[in-house]
Image 1 (cartoon, rainbow, N blue to C red):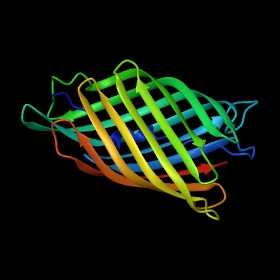
Image 2 (cartoon, rainbow, N blue to C red):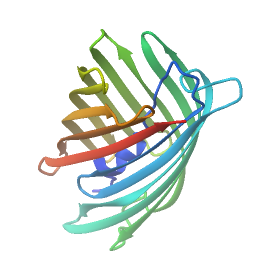
Image 3 (cartoon, helix red, strand yellow):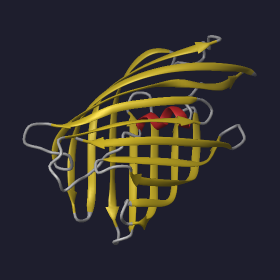
Image 4 (cartoon, helix red, strand yellow):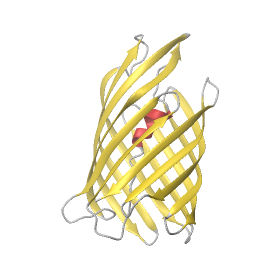
Length: 232
């Protein structure tokens, strides 16, 4: 069985996107996750000349790193990874919500202990990453969000959809359900959980989620994530 990054690693793809009616030029984001391992990520989206957050072209830069583990021929393998990614982003927004489409290079370095020669993801690999994320405002209260990302060369994929309702208008606190799929040619996992997001300030938003991840050839395990984003 090949090694793979867990949900915690895949959470590095959750580069939260924010649409705003105000003319902000960028958003910074950071977060962490835990499941089979732990990971952290951070990045920034900055509008290119003529655009703003939620409209036009932007550049996204992000980095992530963490640990994970898996079994190969009855031996537990511990992995460490570090990833850097750059992407050109096309943004749309309106009363209906927002949508972003992006693509760019992703450089990933994976180190394994003990070494697993059957794992072709070890070492440093360059890939093309494409992504779409956004939200559809279904009513004054309900919102449907999505994120989908694909590594073209390695066949890695991560997708998440969440459905939440506004529970406290003043702080724009939302809560609801999330579901996701992730994997690559060697494994497949399904994630189900709950999330809550709230404004921590005029331009600062926080989000937490927790649930269970069911993966091939192992028992379901809990996961948790936390993230923040800041408009500037």
